[in-house]
Amino acid sequence: MKEFIIAKNDADQRFDKFITKTVPLLPKSLLYKYLRTKRIKLNGKKAEISTRLREGDKVEMYINDEFFAPKEEKYSFLGAGKQLDIIYEDENILLLDKKAGLLSHPDEGEYTDTLITRVQRYLYEKGEYDPKNEASFAPALANRIDRNTGGIVIAAKNAETLRILNEKIKLREIEKRYLCITIGHPPKKKGIAEGYLLKDEKKNTVTVHHKPLPGGKSIKTGYTVIESRGDLSLVEVELFTGRTHQIRAQMASMGCPLLGDGKYGTNALNKKYGGYKKQCLYSYKTGFTWKTDAGILNYLKDRFFEAEDVWFRTAFFENKL
Image (cartoon, rainbow, N blue to C red):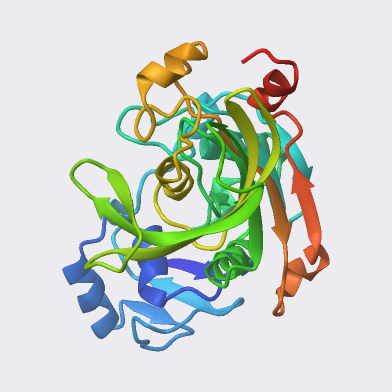
């Protein structure tokens, strides 16, 4: 028999999810059987799979040891790089300046060295995260940025913070601003572009339309031209909706694609400015604009953070593009 006392990071999750994470080798058919026959109990009693766990609850599992995953001698995240550009850190969150070229999460091509594995290594070596003491939680990213785009990513150090951040993102109470360089100039110095975005799943591209259409999703993008030099403009962008490739497609549809964007711009234009192979787009500013209670993160209300090292901004003002 193994006994688990629910700690803070494991609270407020469904009973079945906790079991699945704690006993990953247990087949679902046995999970339901063991709950039914009380070989898995919550506070000494039978419990429904949808029961939400509370801090201090006791979970008892009368399960063969073979179903528990073996303890790792060495954690895979220890193979990740150590380089992290930290903009802000406290006991709950990390604000990280992810550089273009680094994956946010592992994929089939790169499993070890990603932003999240670097975060886990960093917190492990600081003594703030030890997998042996966590039944189901690991430090996690609340948002992600594509590999070829840089910008601010928020990491949660505990489960309560992650839940709050996920909710605030849904409520659009976290503001993000982007910098980009366009080839050509937006139609106004400051404006709001609206339309409808249609995604082609097979090609992983989107198209912008000016009238509603089946499958199309509304988009709204605010922009301000900071400065124009020759055919290039440095533009700040605010997203009022968050759709796939929204900024890249919206700016291209206005006749001013992003410098370096081969998907929605043209390689011929990019070659004119040195043949950039990554788009000049950066999520450079994040603000916590709480309109509702944020629990343990209330102290972040109305605070804004900015990434200072935006690689193309300096080149733009020094006329090196």
